[in-house]
Image (cartoon, rainbow, N blue to C red; front, side, top):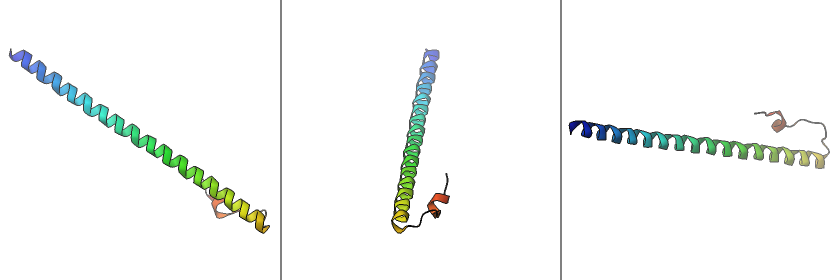
Length: 74
């Protein structure tokens, strides 16, 4: 009888550990996904800023000059 109780207790503890690990992995995955999306947004915003600056320079006739944004790389 005591062996059954110990086995049951061990199984419950293992289940709790597995559930905690699953939650940790899900949180880690969500964090990576958020970081990926944030990076994509930042890259898109940077490209849009470059395009706007290039367009503004074309309108002003300042061809050939390098902007501060063009100097930034990731």
